[in-house]
Image (cartoon, rainbow, N blue to C red; front, side, top):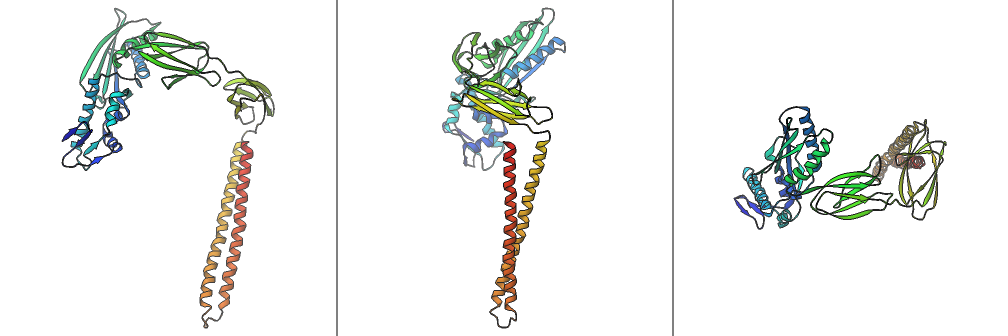
Length: 441
């Protein structure tokens, strides 16, 4: 068995067949290091406690939530030496796999860019789907918590183990237990200390104070659509030390972009400027007095008027005894006024339309296949005519014209029959199309 790192190939003697990158990726799928092709590290996190007291249950629930919220999708900082150990460990795993599965595919070949990416790009943590198999993951985290009642302290022992180097790092954190501020306190401890410890970089709490519902994008990735019951309101996010690009945007407001250098806990205020409403839209329904909701907010009973800015807007129109209608209104930049007439259908109208349109489609199919009988008649007539024509040259054949007349008649009648029913089938399809178009519009 030979490992050649510069060209990144593994040869299992005596077979010397090279397979491409995608095939290699499929072969190593039997163990989780396939994620390394995407610069991901699979991790497992376990939370255990000393007893089942109420305080410990609170701590366990909070820790599990914080682990899922902050660790997955974050970058794990590794030194060059640790990345080298990870790469060698990966090669060793592939080597062992080749030895255990000797076949014609015993030579794996990876592009040089695989190692370059492994050393240059961020390594993102991805949560393992296996809860009980530590050996299947590259990184393992253990959190052992304990509530010390006599001192009213929370003790959290953290263990971080890298399977590629067998390095185990341990650290203990303490937090005063306060029932009133418990979750806020443990979240800050997790972000500032525990998260910084397990991910090997400093993390800080950033408060984004926003005056309007908006999307929050950090470093090119949408983190959330933030919506609150009242504004201005605060969204909390943990960010690693360094420079980050923050983008706050909403459809009805001007976008705000800002570079943020994170070196400590930070609070940012974002004042989104709403776009100017340039078009007066009037909605008239038949019957009138229908309830109209604009982007999930009750607007009033029709007819209604509302000033809208440029873009697409969503309305829901409803009236008791009638089917609700969803309406997407597009407003152009130069539009100043727009009137929409909406016709509401009685309840079960849609079912009626569906059933009636299905009847038209079924009728069209029936006409089509009935017409095919005429086509088959024409084909049979053609063979009779051809056969009769061939034997008509034989003087012993007494009635040479009977078959010719019969065949000709079958051909003509079959074509006419086919044409009539295919026209009827096409007519049903045209009616179906007009019917559906009328209903939709």
